[in-house]
Structures are given as structure tokens and as C-alpha cells.
Length: 259
Image (cartoon, one colour):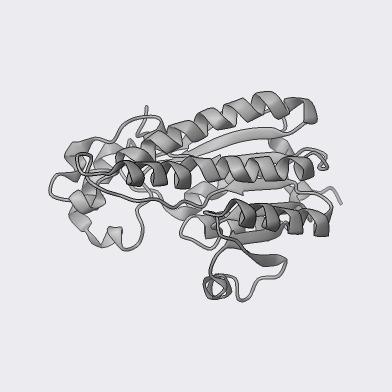
């Protein structure tokens, strides 16, 4: 019988996702597992991994501190040596410091760039030799619409605790450029590199503030916030051979915010 599954090539692909048990990361991990991928979650807390993936097969936890270059190198080497290759690297984890634009210290600003950009480079650098062993390696970097446009600060009036800090968007703009650079460099190895820029995907805690959510919804053309499942289609596409001719692109999943 003819195989009608357009993502059948994902079966048994080796996928590495940083921060893959989080609000958005778990949605990406789960859809890839549904289509048969072997998924490695690189993160710090085993208990959170167990809670999210307790009933899942073909998903493995590798304790990784994304703030440590040695930890990054060791984790990627462990997976690469075990599996013989890496097919898909999804840079999703983030760490940083938020503060008011006038009060942010230089150290806080740099920490946000480290957590939003520099560790992506460290994962790419460590993974290249294993991605070269894939028939069609993929790197997917999670950027942000705030790497494309600056925040509308009126939305945060009276909600300063949610204010998007200046280091975040700066780092995510760098992620978009980093993706294009490595798409240029790695094309000769048949490795595709793209970035995804999510729009308003507020956490469940932020969603408790109904008035703030209305402000976010009003900025989108679809008049709603994003839910984690909204990222699953683009994750499947960019991880599979159906995107073999897509590289160097930044794809906004933002309900039309940045039109």
C-alpha cells in the first residue's frame, strides 16, 4: 500500500532539542515523536523531563547546562558517538536577565545575549561534524518576532513586569543572521539552516492576565495569541526532507503581527 504519510522520512531520525520539555519545546518534541523520530532532550532537570515524557518511547534526557561550553560539547559528543550522526538540531533553550531599558546593567545585557544567541553558536559548532554524517542535516534556530521588529511598548504600559528587554530582541536578531550565515556555509554539505520566529506565545502564567492578553491579541491579524501546537507544522516541515530546498529563511509564526 502506498505510504501517504508525507513525513515518513522522520522515522528514526536523530533529533536534538535544547530545552525540549518547556512550554514550546515540548510541543515540538512531541510532534516529532509522533512521527517516529528519536528525540534527545538537552536540559538541566530530569524531573521536569520525566513529568512531560513519562509515557513516551524514543525520547531521551541528556543533562546539559546550556551556560557551559564544556557541557554543550560533552552532550553533543555523547549523542553523536552513540547514534553515529545527528539529523536535526533544534536550538530552543533560552536564559537571560530581564530589566527596565534604563536600568539594565552591562552585565545583564551581555547575559541575555549569551542566553539568546551565543549558546546557539556553541551548539551549532559542536554539532556540525555529526550533522555532516546525515543525508540531509537540519538546523532549526528558534528566534523571535522581536528579532524582526521592536516591541510596541504601549502594550506593556502598566504591565512592566512583562516588558520585553532590549537584550532579548538584539540576541534574536543575531539568531536570524547566524542562521543565514550557516545556511550559506553548510549548504555544500546538504545541511539546511533556518530560523523560526514565534510571535505572541505567552506562558500559562502570563495568560492569567486577561487584559494583557487582549492587548497582545489586538496586535495580530488573527486576533488571538499563539498556542504551542501552532509551532508543530513548521517544526515538522523544517525537520523533514520536504524542506530540502528551504535554507537561510526566517519564518514568522506570529498570527500576522509582523506583516
